[in-house]
Amino acid sequence: MQNYISVNITPTARERLAEAIKKFGTPSSYIRIEAMEGGGCSCGCGGVAYSMMIEDKPTEQDVVQDVGGVRLVTSKESLPLLEGTVIDYYDGVESSGFVINNPNVETPSCGCGGHH
Image (cartoon, rainbow, N blue to C red):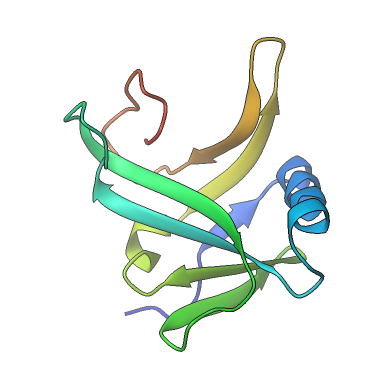
């Protein structure tokens, strides 16, 4: 099993993550990213669900890595599901937010927008 986080973060997403840490975290905070097979929603699409949150301290079982100046942390179980993932930030007229693109997931996202 790999022991590194194979994720890329676009410059816009890095900027927005840094802003979120500054506003809601501390200088020593991490961004936790997790992936869960099965979609995690009631729609039944079976995709991969993602979550991101600010966290102050990783656990001993976590994998921690600096990705483009952003300190990411994830569980070892999420590593294979995150392989090749790109975190981006979309800022449009009707919506804005982080977009997680995983080229290895075959199931397209459904209408709930919570997974890929």
